[in-house]
Image (cartoon, rainbow, N blue to C red; front, side, top):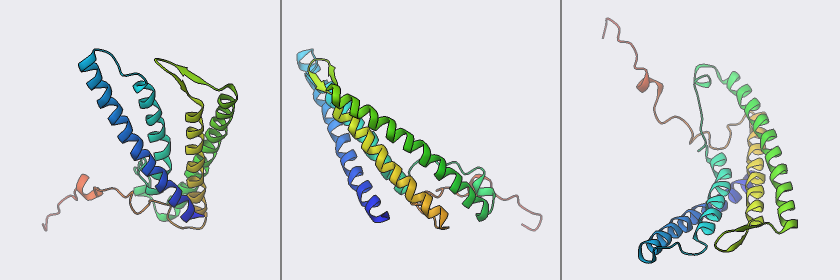
Length: 183
């Protein structure tokens, strides 16, 4: 299951990176079009919004797998491994519950948007319901990452990305040791 989640997250990260390229290209085309024609290129805003949704919600699982999310180690760096296991368990249970709720809520919203054929009215009529499914799918895969990390925590193993999420600056760099008289 871990390999599947990691592989799926990696594929989604590549798609998210491609969406960022699409977003940048749409902005360049729109700015260039505005410069030469004094008006916006039709559908560029909608393409930018759609690619931004893909970039954000398809990158979330990869951040969970690689440990690229925000980590605050004020407490965990000062306690032993036993307490850190307890912290990991609490964090991944909480994350799993919250992300499960987000998955259900966004899935319900996506079903409603699909049923209503939700569209955005702008320069062009743009369907919004596919983006709702992208959000729900991104949360669903993030939930799988949370559950994998919860199981790893329960088994006493390091969570995914733990080896890459270590602080790049050691505490000795931030808080240098106080010199003694012998030094």
